[in-house]
Structures are given as C-alpha cells and as structure tokens.
Length: 201
Image (cartoon, rainbow, N blue to C red):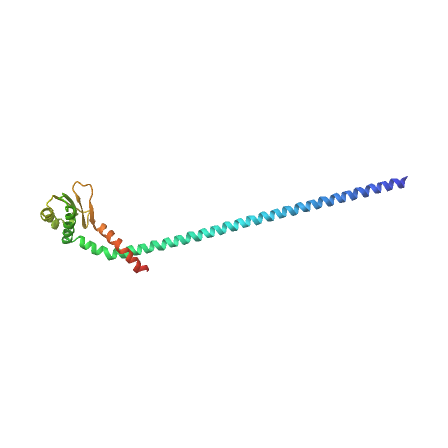
C-alpha cells in the first residue's frame, strides 16, 4: 500500500513537474517571440526616424543651397547695377549740369519746347527756371520768348531747380520737366544697355 502511495506521489510529482516545465518553456518561448517583435518594431521605428531626419536634413541642405545661390545671384546683379549707375552717372552728370546751367543752352531748349506747345495755336505758358539764371533768363522770357510765341509767358524762378526748367500751359494742369534729374534719368536709360555690355559683356 505504501509502495502504491509512493508511486502515485512520484507520478503526480513528475506529471506536475513535467507540465510546469512545459508551461514554463511555452511562456519563455512566447516571451522570446514578444521580445523579438518589440526589438524588431523598435528597430523599424528607429530606422524610420533616421530616414525622416536624413530626408529633412537633405531638404534643408537643398533649400539653404538654393537660398544661398539666389542671394549670391541677387547680390551680383545688384552690384552690377550699382556699377552701371556709377559709371553712367560719372559719364553724364557733369556734362548735363554744365549744359543745364548755361543760360544760352536753356534759352534754346525753352524756345524749342515752347514752340512745340504753340504749334497749332498760341497757348499761354508758365515756365519755372533756376534762380541762379534769373538775371540772364528773365529778359529773354519777357521779351523774346513772348514775341516769338505770340502768347503770354509767365516765368517764375526758384532755388529748387538747380538747372534746366519745367514748362506747361498756364491752365493745363500739367507740365513737362527738363531739370537735371530728368535729363540724367533720360540719358541714363539710353546709356545703361551700352554701358552694361561694355562692362559685363
């Protein structure tokens, strides 16, 4: 009887141990699979993060290179324009100033422009001239110009006009400017393309 009891106890122990060992192995295998899945997912996530970071870095590099290239191009263009402006100004400003502060030259141009206004029929004109040329130009406007045009001419003199003049119909609401600034701007527009070609090919 005692032997039977011992056998039964041994059998139960062995069966329990065997079952426990099997369950332990299953749990361990399952844990191992889960661990491998977690590691694989972590590696995939890490790879995705690295790929995204690399793409972002590459995009940023491309953008920065594009911005730098554009900034350099704009800087070169601005510098070229500054050089053109400087060269054209040096070529024109002195001669334009000299011409437009010459009483004789201003008389000729005023007369030519005034005749253009009076081509169809006499028009009363208003002329604004440099204060510095008042002594030379006032008699010309009052006497010669009015007679030639067969119309009224009102002249005013100002320090705001250093050289040249502005002219227009007395009641027309507009005028034409022949000042140093407008002459320089006009001549610069004609000289700029040629100057650019000479300087930069």
